[in-house]
Amino acid sequence: MRWCFSEDLEVTVASDRDSALAALRRVEPEVVTLDLGLPPDPGGASEGFSLLEEILRLAPMTKVIVVTGREDKENAVKAIGMGASDFYQKPLDADILTFVVNRAFRLAELEKENQALCRQDNGTNIRGIVAASPQMLTICRTLEKVAPTDATTLITGETGTGKELLARALHELSHRADSPFAAINCAAIPENLLESELFGFEKGSFTGATQSKKGKIENANGGTLFLDEIGDMPMALQAKLLRFLQERVVDRVGSVKPIPVDVRVVCATHRDVRKLIDSGDFREDLYYRISEITLDIPAVREREGDALVIAQSLLKTLGKQMDRPNLAFSEDAINAITSYAWPGNVREMINKIKRATIMAEGKRVTSEDLELSCPEQSPSALINLRQVREQAEKKAILQALQTSGFNMAQASRLLGVTRPTLYNLTDKYKIDTSAATSEV
Ligand SMILES: Nc1ncnc2c1ncn2[C@@H]1O[C@H](COP(=O)(O)OP(=O)(O)OP(=O)(O)O)[C@@H](O)[C@H]1O
Image (cartoon, rainbow, N blue to C red; front, side, top):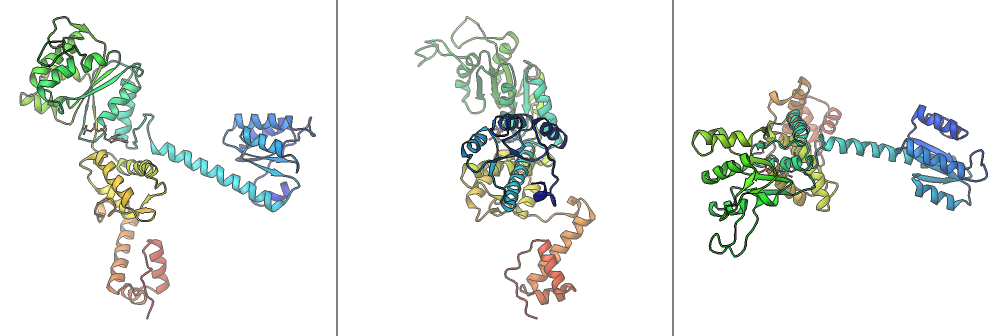
């Protein structure tokens, strides 16, 4: 076996369990071939199985190929059941063994890549939130610190930036996670209904109140109450909410008996609360009550690198959901995603990528599928001289090809380079030359 691999692989040989484990710790091999017949039980498989178990316990990513006798199918199946990645039956055939071992290396490599991608996918430990930008990672770290406390938290940010997602994360990472998360959108409910929705009502307190009903606040008892669009809460209700936040009791509509409620309150708004206070539309004392901690979520366009990371993750998830798992963005789509301003933030991204997943022909999603126009990068957006040069070069080549009607000989003369050089350049810039002719 050593002879069969020695040219391109580093091989370490061990002849019993102890030396194998010592080698495993020292070399950390990606692939192990393991003969089940080991001393002191060379005729059986007991020692081989216990070594297999130990290797997979110590280094679960190792690909173990079990080597068995020709008639030993039963043990081969058992080894696979225990977690071996493959088996090989003696007698030894160098070509087949090399094939099996190379396949195991490829598998190990793919698993590593996959792990790295999963890590990169979601730069935070918070479920559902994809982030790579320093701004969002700081917010996620603050959120992890604030979550276990009962501090009333105000989340601000443009529409679609993930305020509700972060509010849910605050709940899930708190000691209240097993209790209810009750959400109410203060802007979506008519003013006259909002009070009874929030605080509940007693039987007979108004026409149609045929029986008493708990409000959202009481329903959230023990858990978290999420007041979305708090900036749109009517003035009259703001006073009642303030009383609740101070006293921690609710007065149902039509009742004089206050009911104590234990909830953590998280609020969100896309509006500038300071301006609302200045214009007399929001109580300043309520603002101080709800903003013991404030999380200000930046728009996607302000987060360095997040647009592409989130788009990639959405393409993967939506692609899977819509049975198109192998889609990838084309270069022009990537340029468009990174330079578009995303006024609707992540929600807009979801819509555009969903559409593109349906519209894409073949495996590439283009900027057209996303309904984004592909921008020309301004030189200031490029990081170095090489990038500026490359972009200018690509543009000149495309122009020459278009002017010459994709005649490679003519285009190379226009550019002052030889034809082979032009072919090298079109390869380098992945310019499609399938329509090109080479007439002189
Ligand atoms: N960082 C992120 N990673 C992955 N998905 C995200 C991220 N931010 C937001 N989303 C998704 O985008 C969508 C909109 O997010 P969410 O509803 O939390 O935004 P919002 O700020 O509360 O919006 P609005 O102000 O309009 O209510 C949701 O489907 C959410 O899961």
